[in-house]
Image 1: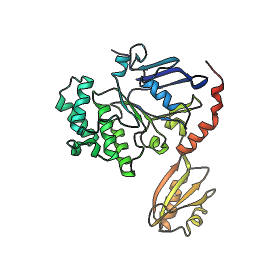
Image 2: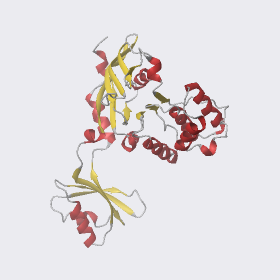
Image 3: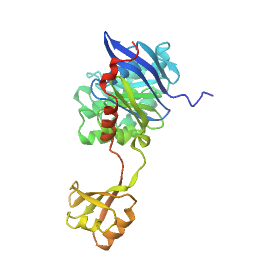
Length: 323
């Protein structure tokens, strides 16, 4: 039996320079089977170069990339056969219908599973059945992205690499696309490259942050965020803001800050305390006949975690290291 402890994606000591400009400086990270990893980095951090090496589009100066144990440099055909790739601009033939295009990709990849069964299953997963007979050039941006994802899924690759898959989509399309990505968890190992930090919180198990050509963070989201601080929470109260902080002041050591109204007929408040006071909040507001519609325990927002990681490793780090 194969060693199940080997990561599906394993990157070690990647270096890449363009002339005198060093772009990657010892990038190392891995993604275990079935995980969804968010790959983050500010502009110029080296993320796009790392993605291009990972997919075999360009080679590194040194270092290794292994996909399900296959080295992408020494055994590129075997490694790439395990990858499904959705670039930021999907590789679509816009004068084909969706059905024609997926059948073309099926033939290109040499899939052995029954054609109708295989394509039908992917069409259902990506929810593009209602546009299967339409020309791709007549599809909306959201449907084109889904077709792009469908082509990546053909052949059932173990690894999916998605580069900015929700850029340019409207809010509803983003939610729908995120739900599709969530449905892939466990069956595929996914790298999701994105600038949308909320996307990482919504769908990813772990995050790798690159800055200045180096990996500055590669952890699970729970490790990165730290334990939930039950003493800090946000509450959503039905009605306006009047009297809420006055009620909270009855709880010893609690402090209250009004945040604003984010849902019609409600008001949000941030509560801080050195201990878990959620039960006291519930009982206090129930007695006062002020419905509390939601209590969220505090955890560091992904935006703050990203900013802290970037600040910890300035881009000037590229000035040193291996040539």
